[in-house]
Length: 175
Image (cartoon, rainbow, N blue to C red; front, top):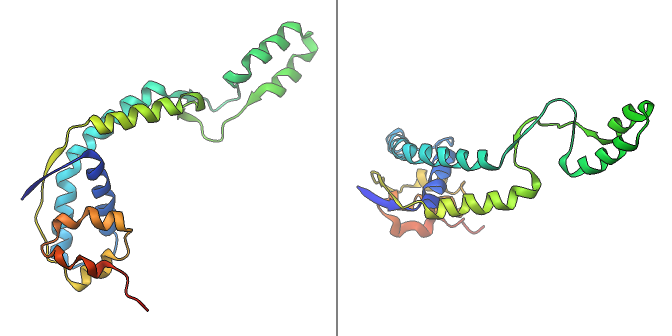
């Protein structure tokens, strides 16, 4: 069978599949079908990953391992350095230098909103994708495992279930 899903739905579906496949209690045949579904969406996820890395790299900057002067403090640092006597230079550096706990690439705080806006727009503008899947019977074992997932993740898997008219069984049992 085939179905067309938005990128957001596919990302949610992937999260659901990753989480449910880590849980015990699903018969092997159903695990196999769910794993095949996960494999069928992998090319879509890889394409999105490439696009999201491209957007990340557009806004990211290198955070060095060694000490550095933060851009928002550089102007004050420069003014002090220009006025300083030679013997005060080490003290000025000590006051202005920072060291990152997590060196690597990061998006500066002043660009984070632009990054979020662009990544969300790119996700929304990604055309829906067709995915192939096989349906599986909803049985008590599967219901018990699905109960361990949040509702949004349960719902993302509903199209795979043959007898989804029984979805009310997902509701927690009243005690």
